[in-house]
Image (cartoon, rainbow, N blue to C red):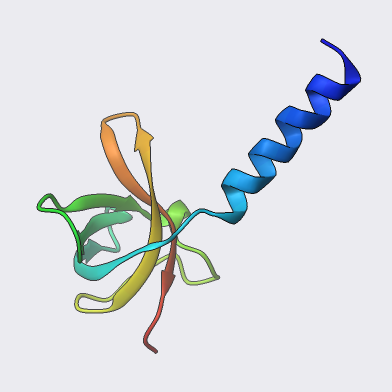
Length: 89
């Protein structure tokens, strides 16, 4: 692979990252003991699981009813929320 191809791939990856749009939703439930819960996305029918390490910031916990922004990725068991950020404090 040439340096030009490598640079082109990097630029494309950077562009895709820059265009990434965060989804929004509401925390349906979160168990501190189990360090996981579910988010009900504003768009879509299925609730998405969220694990404590996927929560951005220091608390690594969420409160039911909290509005959040997040990315959706494919995890071990299907779609899940990552990069979760509370939007109302």
